[in-house]
Length: 258
Image (cartoon, rainbow, N blue to C red; front, side, top):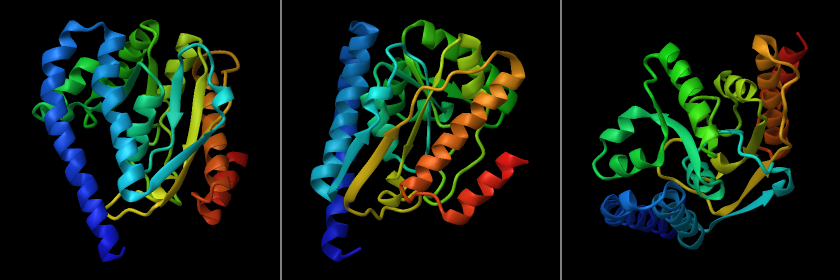
């Protein structure tokens, strides 16, 4: 990364941080008086769109979306690849209102965490996986009934570009129990916005929205099969985008046949 571009990245983070510091206190004053859909737009959509636009105009990080026609009319469970912070900004603004699974520790962050708490997220304790799964099942069902999209990163954490993590079955279980499909989403954001460090690369992020995948039947077997089908689609899409190493992709195909 050249010196000039490094300066642009510093400017980006400075403006992003300042915007959060200024916007969150305003949200805490205004948002409680808004309906939930309006509150979600006010707190999350406007700021996340600003963050995505800031990345575009300051560090040259644009995006394009394919597969929009695959988005179902009914709210459902979104299973997305997780590589960077960028997709969190993008998906939070693109699908609205949206409830996402996040670490409950974020609520402790002054102003930012307090504003996030008003968006009906599913805040879990990662140190207690069993409790987290129960919470996802209960609160996830409530959010779907409230006509919210539910965003889940099934890998549980950001995985560097070129790799793919094991998918938790929590999202598939939520979809099966609610009688709704999962909507798989792949992208290559990690190639431009790495998991570690401040370094960025200009370019165009490809976001691919797959066809809604419905479970065949119900119960634990249907959940496992739905989860595997979502994994397979995302792995293939990641490979097609050049965001999954050929060797890793081959290993996933081999495991699927066993």
